[in-house]
Amino acid sequence: MDSVAVAVFLVLLSAKLGAELVLARLNRREIRRHAGVLPAALEGVMDRPTYEKAAAYSLAKNAFGQWEMLWGAGILVTTVLSGVLPWSLARWVGIFGPGQWSEAAWLAAVGLALSLVDLPFDWWGTFRLEARFGFNQSTVGLWLTDKLKAAVLVLVLGVPLLWVVLSLVGWAGRPWWLWAFAVVMGFQLVMIVAYPKLILPLFNKLTPLAEGELKAELLALADRTGFQARTIEVIDGSKRSGHSNAFFTGFGRFRRIVLFDTLIAQLDRAELAAVLAHEIGHYQRGHIPKMLLLSAGMLLGGFATIAWLAASPWFGAAFGFPGTTLAPALLLFGLLGGLATFWLSPLLNAVSRKHEYEADAFARTAMGGPAPLVGALRRLAQKNLTNLTPHPWFSTFHYSHPTLLERERALTGGSPR
Image 1 (cartoon, rainbow, N blue to C red):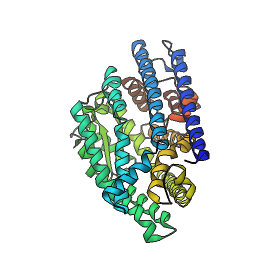
Image 2: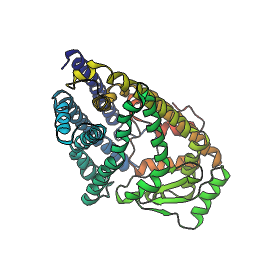
Image 3: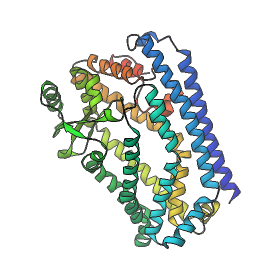
Image 4: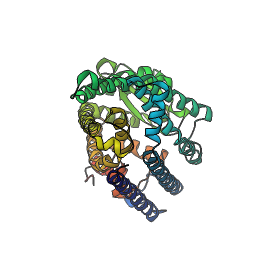
């Protein structure tokens, strides 16, 4: 292996891991600094026992996350530097033969194998950590079924898509990466429409919201705010977790509003309407196409980088792959890309938080004041044991949403920061 490339890899990994551990430590110290003493601005959000439980939950996730990071770093180093990847490709091609289908299947197999080594942490997080704080509602059988279904989807959808991308090198020549970008971006757009109708029902049951005052009020709000939705559906999120959420999916006439059953159980009608108004705000303020454009730009940059790396003999050789084939470049980019894009997290989160403020402001106007949304945010923070006092640097790198205090200040006319 090329010693310079290995050194660069280890430096990037060490920098990211070190930053993550420092951020986790800062957040842990901030949580403990406020332990038992809720800031005056947040009085009334939680009673003392709930606040202490929320702090314990945040600390438990903090400790768990550090072990998970160290495990992931160890697996990455072993996978990249041990030579197992070029060995596995050679063995795979020896058994199944060369060609795009074979390489696509190899990429999917490596991805599934790497997901297997994370299963112990996934299991512990679900059946130990989440269960300890009363959130887990899943069973081992359901958890295993979910994993198997996800693996099948990777094979059914992922392998053909990878085959197309790999084949474009021969079909399109040097500008293959532009065509690959178009294909993958088109696939993502199709999935936005197809996911709630074809994929989501494989994991969850969606049922129309029952007729009654709640449905009438929510549909009236949608009409009043110019959001024409075909239906409002309820997803059975409670069969896996006590956490709650709401979202809308699709475009145009395929648009649907989806509420978690846990959300309906936790909020009153005015608060549910405020949450829906917030989601509609994302639509009316154009956040969806803006984020799609941002995603498209990053995807295009990613494919341009992959094309450059795949054409550079030093890159594959640095990690034991002979020649300049595309499949190893795709895999290595997928494994190593996060070491660089991690440092973009503050910028991406800043964009997301700006959108959240704008959606909150839309909801405030739609509801005739901030009270319903503030009430919903407070209730959800209590029910989800939200960390109310994260360290600013930790939230900068890890929070796509503003903190509760920041959102309340913005909603009530104060500074969001």
